[in-house]
Length: 279
Image (cartoon, rainbow, N blue to C red; front, side, top):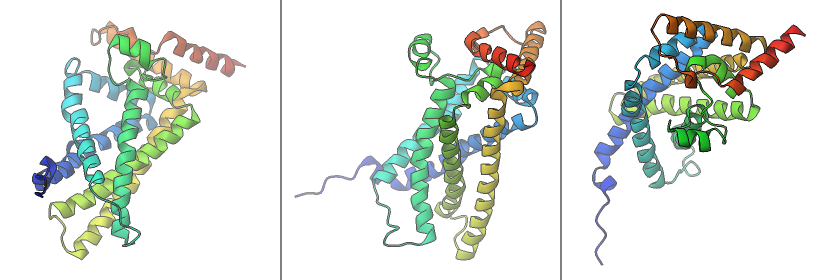
């Protein structure tokens, strides 16, 4: 009985694995670093973060094209190939309990967590697609699409008030950071950048420091954003956002778009916060 012909993935294993590792660094990894750094700019002030969001959205109609070309399609490619790689092998830490092998297993685990988290995060904040029927009938009733670009700090802060969501984001951020930091180390081996044991040990130390620093940035951004979702901080953020929006509209730099601002029912929480502050 003849053996079945090898699959497409098996025939092109060398090329696909290298494209997979490359896509994990450029552009997916690079985008994640920039995304966390932009989010962490809220630690300086709501004004700084809102400026960064306006700069991103200044791309206008090109923004979806840029997002799909340089973010979503590479993420999907990396995730799909990653799932195929995971499905083709079994973790063997029980038989070979070496630290490198355990890190490889955690690389697989965090990759799966990261993929699910990214999908949940995009739905929670943006709703995946901007079709009005989809947003009104499905996304909003399920609690998604919470982010408003022109009310960036306050809308994100309010979306992160639930402790369950904070836990989800903590796990997701740490999984993404580990997957990137350890992935850089394994990518260096795949591409022959560090071959000797000494070079691999040095690279591991550098990747560890990078991962720890990026984790601090990501977690700090999460809680920095969260603090502007209630009380006086919410009022402060809304005042900054409204002032910036009005100035940009008056200067002709921005077309009025109430859909990108906090919804009326969301603004009611600001009124509650103001009343609490007055008491």
